Length: 72
Image 1 (cartoon, rainbow, N blue to C red):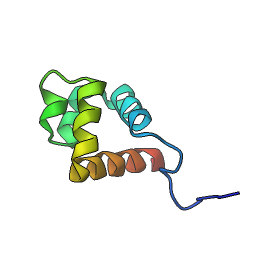
Image 2: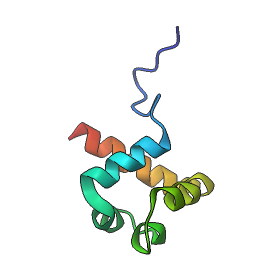
Image 3: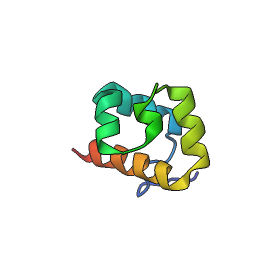
Image 4: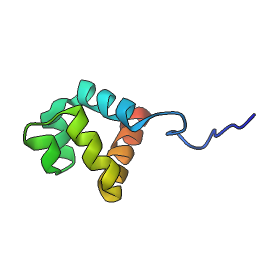
């Protein structure tokens, strides 16, 4: 049995993270916090996932925001 108590992202998909952030902040709120064009111009979960999977620095920012909001 593998447990990862120190990793808040363990078992959470990128899609689940993005869906929760959009539900909580909306696309405008997300774009204000993370300056990425895919959040500003015709945003969608699918296009954002495609971009985030190809762009490690952007994914890290999204994951960090998710962790920050989970702590608050």
